[in-house]
Length: 371
Image (cartoon, rainbow, N blue to C red):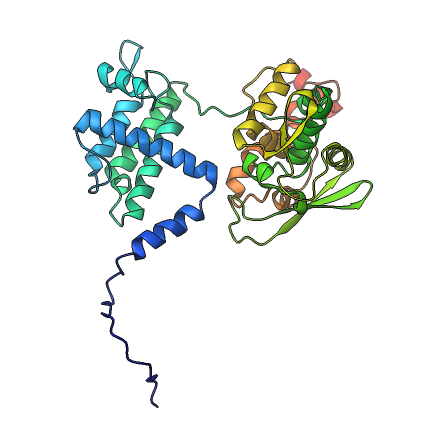
């Protein structure tokens, strides 16, 4: 059987099977950039700017002309992660003049050690940089992995914990909503908060990515909104989620004062209650949560993620099945969501109230008459 296809003869140098065309790598990088969320791109740029500055100051070389050895990754870890000394103090190896120069270059906000999560993120970005350039990653060596793991354990034993944003469970969330009384801005913020929280604990990038055409009304108490590409689902397939009750009413109120046929669903509000055409940024969503928390007199570390963690925690409090919660949040990892969910479940569990008046008679007699 002859599988040869007759083609018109053209004069063009054929590629070798193990060879890329000159512009293929550039095209591949363009696909990667276009498929990466805008806030992720910003975080990558920030991390790479830091790597570039640190390398120049520490090693006198630039980032990107050749792969880095794992010794550089090791030095980065010990330069930036604080370790406990015998005296009880904490120290890291980054020389003070270099630390000050990084702050002066505005790639670092203040002098001192970095948080473990920040170091981990910057190592992950360095690994990504090497992958894009088809180089072996220095962060994959057993030396680097072991050092990072042991550094995390050492910090944990010394009481350094990974900081999490305050979860907006029902009571503080209602306090956030209660501050939304300032005219058009309050109407917008109430709709945004309720969509992000009641609509499944949406990420801030998902909230600002919603367009007017992504929402539709089913009845007076129910709206649907459609998600496209998200952090965990990049297929681009539209998936509709429900908004019911107060969330549906708040969205209807916002669209009544800020009608639009197209464009971003949540837009900027200027002085005098004038609604602009420009959509909110992800950072502005975080600032809305922080502003409302301050107005409500709420203590804690508030951010946009407070809505997502609060939704999951409250669902656990109210005994909603985990599968239904994940269908709304679109978490792909059970491990990621379980920390919040279990915390909420335990808040309402009898196991936390064994000494309360509601404890059964058998439990009380056992406490009163231990063997």
